[in-house]
Length: 313
Figure 1 (spheres, rainbow, N blue to C red):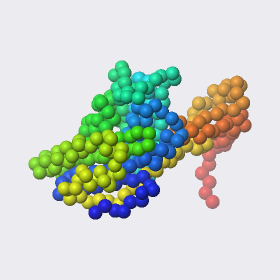
Figure 2 (cartoon, rainbow, N blue to C red; figure 1 turned 90 degrees about the horizontal axis):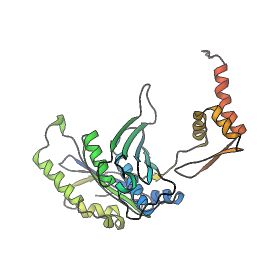
Figure 3 (cartoon, rainbow, N blue to C red; figure 1 turned 90 degrees about the vertical axis):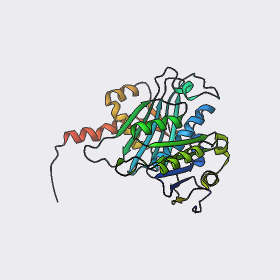
Figure 4 (cartoon, helix red, strand yellow; figure 1 turned 180 degrees about the horizontal axis):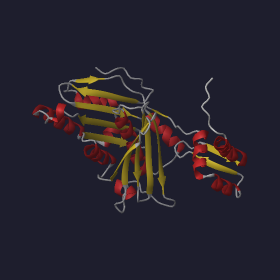
C-alpha cells in the first residue's frame, strides 16, 4: 500500500516487485523544474531534453549507495553545446544548458539535431564522492550519444557500463518533469535468471512501453503506478522528497578565480573595475574588486612564507 504523500512536495517513490529481482521508481520533479526554469529561459525542445535529464538524474541517484553527487552531462556538437544536471545524495538538484550564440533551436528538434549533428556528441555520467578518501578519484564514464532520446542513451550506458538492464520513461514540458525507472537486479552468483524472472521483467517492460509522454505529463505518479502495476504485488518504500538547491558560493567562485592565476586576474582588472561572475545554474551574481582579488592570493602567499611546524598544546 502506498504511503501518504505530501502533495506540496516533489516526490520520488521507490518500490520492489515481490518474488522477482526487479526494482522501480517513479518521480515527479515539477516544482524543482519550475525553480530551474524561473532562473533561465530555454527553447521548447531544450526544455524537454533538460527536463527529462532532471528526472533521469533523480531516478539514478536514488539507487546510489554513496554520499556525493551524480552529474549527467551532454557535450553537444550542434546548436546546444552543453546540458548539465546534478543531483546529490540528499536529492538536491540543479540544471543548466548552454546554447551557441546566435543558434536557433526549432520546437520539434530531436536529440541528434540539438547535440549530435556531426556524430561527435558525448554523454557522461560523473560520480563525485563528497568526502573523498586519500587517493580516491571522481569516477566518470563517457560514451557516444547512442540513442534517439535521452532515455535510450542512458539505458545503453547502464547496460554497457554497469551491466544492468534498465528501462526509463521520461517526460517534460515547460511545467512538468516526470519519470519512471525499472531495473532488473543481478541474480546471486551471476547465475542466469530463472525463466519466471525473465518473464516478469519482460511483462513489466512491456507495461512501461505503453506509457505515452502526454499521459505522463498529465497524470500524477500515484495514478501512474496504479495503472501500470495494479496486477503486481509490490512493496512501496518511504518516499523521498527532491528539491532545487544550488551549491554555488562566493568561496567557490573565489577558488575558481585563484585557479586562473594572479597574473591573469590582475591583467583583467586593468580593463575593468570589478570581475563579475554569474552562476550558470541559479543566476546568482558575484563581484570581486581589486581588493577582493588581492585578498584571494594573500592567504596563499602568507602560507608559503611561513614555515610549517608541528606544535601541539
